[in-house]
Image (cartoon, rainbow, N blue to C red):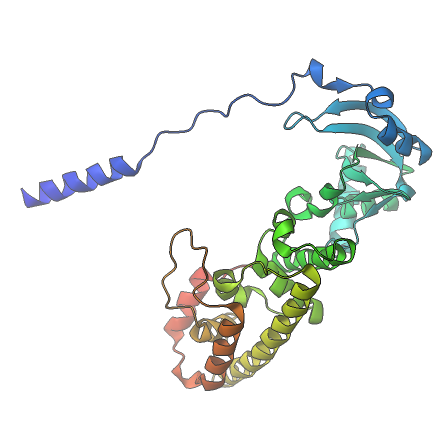
Length: 332
C-alpha cells in the first residue's frame, strides 16, 4: 500500500506540473492585401534615398508582424556596407556561401539595409555582401528601412551564421563603443535589447584586449554577478575595460595552473574550466529563480576570484573532476 500511495502521489505531482498548451497568439499585423504600399507616395523620403543611390525599387509593404513600412529594392552593391561593429568576416564562411549561391544559380536571401546619409548599413549581411562581391554581382536585394535602431539589432537579426560567445561579446562591446560616441549620455540599460546581456560587455572588452581569451570559462560566474551599470555609457565602458584587465590577469594565473596540471600528466581539454570552477566565488551560492539582485557586485567577485586563484592548489585536482566539468562545459 505505501508503495502504491507513493506512486499515486508522484503521478499527481506530474499531472499538476503539466500546464495547458498555449493556443496560437491573437491575430496581429495587416492583412496581406492591406499591407501593400506605394513606395514613392507612402515612403517618399526613403524611396528618394534608394533612387539617389542608383537603386531600383521593387515595391513597398508593411511587415506582417508590426506593420513597419519597408521597401524591397535592388541596391548597388557598393552602396551597402556592413555595420562596423559586426563580428569579423569569416573568409571560409563567405566562400562557402558564394559556392552555395553559385550552385543554386540565384541570390534568394535579401539583406537588411538601414538608410544613412552616404549609403546604407546592413546589420546582418556581412557574409552575404562578401559572397555577392566575390561573385561579381552589381546589385544586392535588400529590405530597406529608415529606422536607425535596427542597425544595432545584430544579435537578433543575424541568422546566416550562428554566433558563438566570442562573436556575441565582441559585437556587444563594439556596439557599446559606437553608441557611446553617438549617445554619450545614454546608459547601458537603454540599449539592453541590442546588447542582449550585460556579461557580454565585460567578456567582449576582454576579447577586445586579447583575441584568444577563453571567455566561456568565465561566463557562468559573470552571468550571476554582472548587471547593466547606472552611469553613462562612456563611464560604463571605462569600468568594463578595467574589469576586463582584471579578468585577463586572472586568466594568466589560471593558465599557469593549467600548465602545472599538464606537467602532472593531465591531458583533458577541460583543465581551464576545472580551475575556474574551483575558484568561482559564487559557485556554492544557490541561484534563485528569476534572480535580479546579484549575489555580490562584479568587482567584488573578481577580487575574490583573484584571491582564490592565487591560493589554488593543482594537486587537489582529481580525474573525476574533469569528467564532471566536461559534462557541463559551455561552447566558446
